Amino acid sequence: MRTFFCSLIMVCLLLSCGGIRTDKDKQLRILTCGIRHESNTFSTLRTGLSDFNVQRGPQVLVEKHLWSEYLKSEKDVEIIPTLHAYAWPGGMVTKEAYEQFKGEILQGIRKAGALDGIYMDMHGALHVDGYEDAQADLIKSIREIVGDEVVISASFDLHGNPSDEFVKGLDLVTCFRTAPHRDGEETKLRAVKNLLKVLREDLQPQMAYVTIPILVPGEKSITEVEPLHSIYERLDTLEHSEGLMDASIFVGYAWADLPRSAMRVFVVAQDSFHLDKAGQEACRLAQDIWHVRRKLELDVESGTMDEMIRRAGELPQKTVFISDSGDNTTAGAPGDNPQFIEALLRQKADNALFAGLVDEEAYSQCVNAGIGGKLRLTMGGRRDTVFGHPLTLDVTVEAMAQDSLLSTSRGAVLVESEGVHIAIINSRRSFTTLQDFTDLGIDPLDYKIVVVKLGYLYPELRDIAPVHLMALTSGFCNLDMRTLPFQKVHRPSYPLDLNMEWEAELRK
Ligand SMILES: [Zn+2]
Image (cartoon, rainbow, N blue to C red):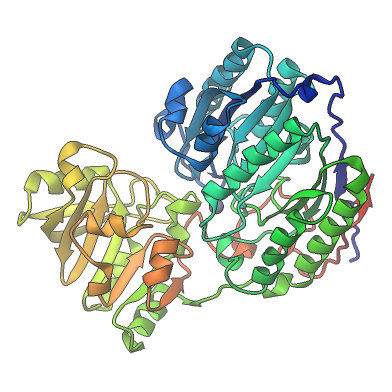
């Protein structure tokens, strides 16, 4: 089958030439807002209001971020922060949560009066129960209030899926250039710097973008290794090329069964004279990505749980990290499937650490038992009832994180059963940093096997792991796209349709 996917859209959002931005003494009034969430549509769980960490008004500026410190340091800028909400990746967001956040953002915009620019701090993979495209709904509502003259710049995680409808409402788009993510702060700073550049120099940015029909999990699109490494390296050069302002590649978020789930390339020209150049560069990047699609594979050895445990035993390295990839909370899974603990016990794994299992109830029982306490504990299988089931073991409580006594979301206990050490945590998260381990007084490098509920290792772990194996476990973040029950995603899409052909085409 030969398919031409007409996918390059020139977004010609002409900015007003009313002269208001040429007044050099003028204060630039910049409003900020954001709803960041990566919504896994395969999950049976929902992400509600209480799952979000929300900052409102001046609170937004309390935490020091590069973007906000930069805006604060610019004498000609007045910042009007409204609402910034963030939740750990999970099932789709409830209507109630989204409508509350949207309502507060719109109210903030109405109250703000005349604005010059808006910075939107987004993830890009937000999906809301009852909405086809909540991000498009949000930008449409914002534009209804501010009109077309206000310049809107948005930053994204490269795992976002911003739809055409959403992008139409934006003037500037940029996203992370690293996965695992190392440049979140720099990306947001770039978004606000580009916004100020447009306002101060009275530019009329134009975006060229291409949607590439590829569904790829983050684990197969790591930017530190080929084939994507050298393609991502071109972005920095492009950004500094004459007449261009920015260039981005979204690898997209594949665990979302939505028409907008795909890879995307954006190139931003500073004016219409350079739009053709932006379009050519966007097409070149998109076509080069398409050519290497079959090389978008795991950068580590993979196999079943039992194969990976056996493999770890054969390897000479003192410590082997294994990802329980199907139940990866950082891609939206529940994180409470104990099947890997069963596998470690079944194989009598020596000196193994399982970090960690999300289970508030089991966690509380261990806190009550105290360090040294022995109890019969039922753990896991409460949230993910599709792939998981509860596991009951006789355990001894070995350690407790300091925060456990403070009832924070970082509570963690370490229990031991038949030589397997299990971290049980009181909120849905994964062990992504060294602090997650040191909270419990443990060093991951003291264990032979460290199982984490991740796909790829996050930077701090990736940097210390002597070796990493990927266990292809069942769950809502299954890494084999072809086994997921896609129904709404745009077809044809690689790798669901292996024999398709595609070319990046310009559509004006
Ligand atoms: Zn991401």
